[in-house]
Image 1 (cartoon, one colour):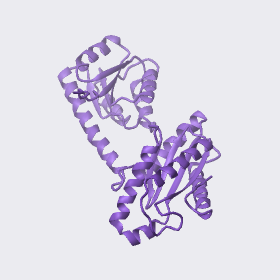
Image 2 (spheres, one colour):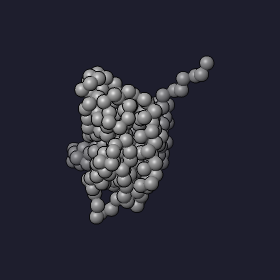
Image 3 (cartoon, helix red, strand yellow):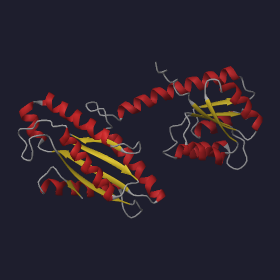
Image 4 (cartoon, one colour):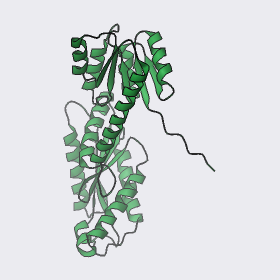
Length: 303
């Protein structure tokens, strides 16, 4: 019988310019958490962005970037804004604690360390983060299909637009619409229509194989796929594969004017994000391509 893998341990980033302090913290917390170490602010920021931890324990007094500035930069970056930060420091004046909390920390613990208290506070803040992440995940999911909703689509498109712009990489978008879905709902009923939406969403999600790709319910019978680092030609190939996979479902549609089964029309657009254009223009281009696909007869890919 295959063994069940142990759940991943929460990851902590410990930041202190005194290596002895880091080793003490790692020893105290390492049994329950995966601990990574940084001895300066710049390294801490780099690690937090490249491989975000679940929580950061941060010293204040460090050469170069001090802890307050590191925390401010973490909270100003959408990639790290939600990582909880706890200050661990010997600065115990009220003004110091106020500065730490105003920088964005969730807690402020002064030295000398009492490790049972640190462990209890870390545990409590991680549990609060877990619950918050769950609520955030639920808020971004479509209740019917179980895929990301329009809110999550908008957030993801903004993030991917900014990321690909920084790296000079292409970003592609596919918008698609179930053909004659109103007729399907009118004649088969809304429960059957809901089941159709679930099946189409499932096959579209399964077609997108990269973890970096995002499929979302854009609204009604419309879906959208965000494809980072993808050229227009590659996105068109993916759209054509999606079209075929939906037809392979062979969901009967006796009231469609293009096929005896449920089909989709798709519009594809891609660009290299830059200052002179916007994510809204990419959506507009994909929407225009979708209109062309419908105007040309539906059950096809427009570009």
